[in-house]
Length: 273
Image (cartoon, rainbow, N blue to C red; front, side):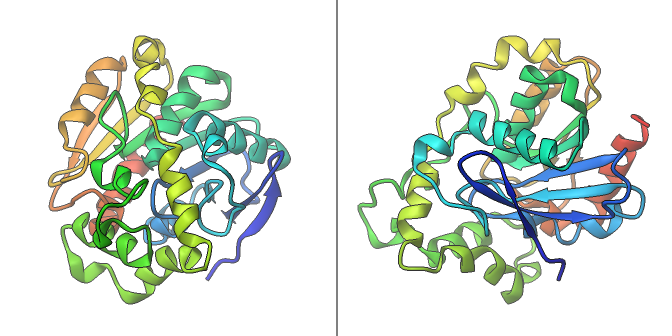
C-alpha cells in the first residue's frame, strides 16, 4: 500500500498520497467526501498514474489527516487547505476530481481560484442545495442507535451507496472505518457533519456559468443519495461541459465501476493536454 505523508496546510497537517510524483507538470488531485478518505480512489489510481501524477488528499477531519472543530472543516476551508498543500509541493496548477463533498470543493476552486485549475471533474457530487444528506445530518444529534456516529454507521452508509455490495470488501470497509474507530472518533465524525451547509455550494450557483476550464460531470446511474438529476443540472449550468452516466453504479461509482470511471476521467483529461 502506498504510504501517505503529512503536509502542513496552516494550523493542520494534511495526509496525502502522491503517485508518479516526478510528473509534476500534469497533476490530478483526487478529493473524497464524507465519510471516506483517499482510499476511495484505490481502484482508479492505477489507471491514472500511468500518464499523470496523482495526488490523493485526505481532507482535514478525515483519514489520517488532523482533526478539527466543525468551523474549520467547511468546504471553502478545505479548498484552501488543498491549495496550501499544492503550494508546499510546488504545484501551481492541477486537474481536480471530486466525489461527494469533494465535488463541492472542486466547484469552489473553479469559481474562486480559476488560475489554479486546469480542469474539473465532479463525480456524484454535492451541488446547489442537494446536501447535506439527511443520513449525515442525523449523526449531529442522534435520536436512535442507528444514527449514532460510529464505524458501524459508516459501514451502513457505504453498503447503501454501492450497486455491487460484493465489491465493498472487508479490507476496503476497514480503510474507511478504522480512522474513526477510536475513543474520540464518534465526536470527530459528528464535527465533520456539523461543518456541512448547502449554502457553501448554493452561493456558487450565480458563478457556475463563468467557469471556463474543461468540466466533466459523472454520475452513478442508480445513485440513491444524490440522484443523476443534479449532474444534469450542473452540466446545464457550466458552459461547454459534459455529462455522463456511469451504468450499474450507485453513489460510490468508483467502487462499483472503477474501470469505467477511469476511462471517462482519462478521456476528460486527454482533451485538456
